[in-house]
Image (tube, rainbow, N blue to C red):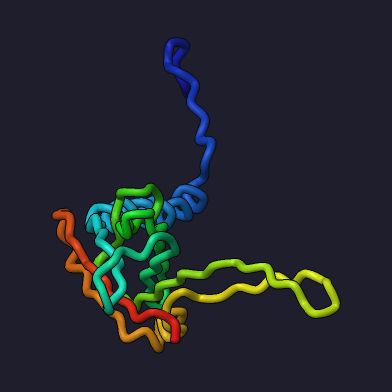
Length: 154
């Protein structure tokens, strides 16, 4: 029998419910460990014919299960981030695509306007499977540079 001064306790979560939280706790630890090996990455995108910086666009690094991108700045530089601009990307082998699309409005013979998008670079760079660009991220916390040269659109 409980004594008069013993604290009254309630088991809010039964044993089965407590055990069901274990996978979620382990998943949280795996997630935190996975974030620890992100590598800061950036570089410069230039035209291969004259070395001039590509003035705008997007660079995307992807694997079968992950994708991260960064905007190309007016000086050709880019930074790849996952959750923030500078947190980097996880270890792995990445396929890369580069998009440099420009919208243009043309007037048809009947006077109507038509908006078209054209790429300033060769269209092979629009697809990571055809771009020919790959990069391996080693997972170190040291910032790395990966410069990219692209052909102009024909």
